[in-house]
Image (cartoon, rainbow, N blue to C red; front, side, top):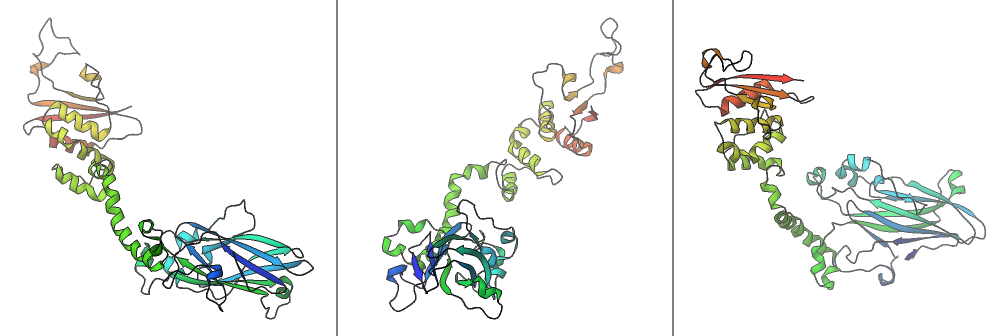
Length: 375
């Protein structure tokens, strides 16, 4: 813990709960007793984008009577990055503005005026504790605003915590701070590669930032090996990779189909090729598009939800044919088949698309009729 600027009236103590060995401006500078002699001790707070950072505050009243003390904050970082909690059991709640607003616009805009964080009733010769929380946007380094910024990205910010007597604030005029404490807020990327370096190099902030460049370049490549199978499966591959997988099996991508159907058809393209031009192949294609079951366990073709029949037979033979069941005058039309689909509730079937599928899969010399039934 680093006590700073103690006065006869009140004192403020800042204790970062997460202290990094790496410090800014080259070399390793530890906090506290190892600060340069003759300079004011200054707290260094290291924060990582997307991770909560807690800083413990202790405000002590050195007077022999109670005081109402107001804690104010100013600095060169956006206000949305910090919150104060006086209840240790309550988690800080950061607003959605932290995610919606531009990171670049915030980081380049200095806070001109101090903001009131909290007012505490501190008893005589007693202390009050509070927590100062910081949360940096997760896309601080990768966001489009950060990448397209015209100015150099700022990583090191300065802040100042001040203690004012509430009585002086209520009187107006220009109140003077009883106590002030400066600190540095350094935004750093989280890195795991530096854990493999000797300790003497782990304490250098420049090396942390330099190694992070290689980590961000190589990590996606290394991690992709563990999930390479998912990139080669059309059901799980990224959408940008689907044209390549479709070309791999010589399957034309149909823009009229949604993404789910395209994935299923690309994955089963070889099976469709193997049975193309047959009843089994046409039924399998319609099954993949409509989602209707194949009903292979049903023997009678007319009872299946995807029914494909050929009106062929011996014609009307007395003693063998029954009117209304299997009596066909003239023996039927050659090279012709009937397709009947029974659509399920809340699952409409596009007739034009089904006809295009049948035209694509049937032999060129065949004709057909299509009937879509709905319950």
